Image (tube, rainbow, N blue to C red):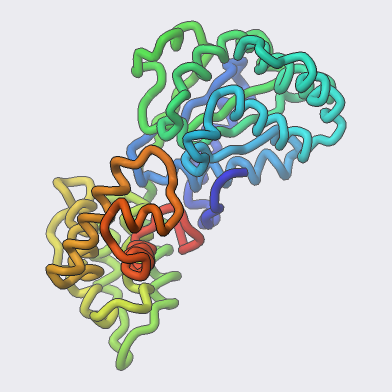
Length: 340
C-alpha cells in the first residue's frame, strides 16, 4: 500500500533476511526496527519481507509512509489505512473494523490501535502473530507519537508484530516513551560486491549503447568498487545510462562515472554522482537557473499545488516545469527502474 514497488534481486539480502526472520520467530519483542542510511536498500528489503509474510499468510498490512501526503498522515488516519489493508487481506476481520469505526471517534490513539488493529487481528485466531510492515518511519512527521502509543501493545506480540524501517536506530533516538516500547533494532549494512556485480551485469545489458561501445568487464569491476555496496548508487548509475533524452551517449556518461576516484563509502562519492548527473541533465546556465528556482519553491511548500498555481509561485512556465520534472525522473530512487 502507498508506494511503488521495486525489484528485489533474488538472494541479494539472504543473510539479512535469514537473521530477521529468525529474530521475529524467536522473540517476543513487539517491534523489529531495521535501520540504516539513506540508499542502503531498506525499502526494497521491506517490500521483499512483505512478499515473504504474505506468501506465508502472515502479513497483516504493509505501508510506505514516504508516499503519503502530509494532510493525510495523522496517526489516527494511518491506523485507519492499516486497518483498511487488514480488511482487504483478511476479510474476516472486517466486522471488528466496522465496530471500531463506530467506537473510536474522539478517543485516544491507544484506543485506535486496540480497536482498529489489535481486536480485528485477534478475531482471526491466527496461530502466529501477524506482521505489520511500516517503511520509511523517519519520513513520517507523526512517527514519534505513534511509536510512543505502541507501548500499549507490548503484551500482545502473540497477536501482532511490527517491522519498521528508519534511517536512525530508534533505541538511540531519544524519542519520548521509546524506552517503554518492546523493540529490537537491526542495522542494515551494504550489500556484497558479488550482488552489486550481478546487478550491473544484468542491467548494463539493457542500455542502448551507441556504435557497440558497451561496458567492459573492467568497467563493471570499477563500478562495483565505487558503489561501496550502496544499492542507490548502483541503481542511479543505471537510471542515468537508461535516460533516453541525455545529450551524451551512454559510453561517455559511463566513462565519466568510472573515472571518478571517490568511493561512496569514502568521502562524497554519492554526492559527486548526483552533481555530475545534474550538470548533464541541466547543462546550460538558463536550465540550471530554472532548476534552482523550481527546487527552491518546492522546498518551501508544505503541500502539493496544481501545476498552474505552482507555475505562478515559482515564476516558471508550466511546460518548463514539465521538462524539469521529466529530466529529474532519471534520478528517482523510488520508481519502477531496476533496484537492488
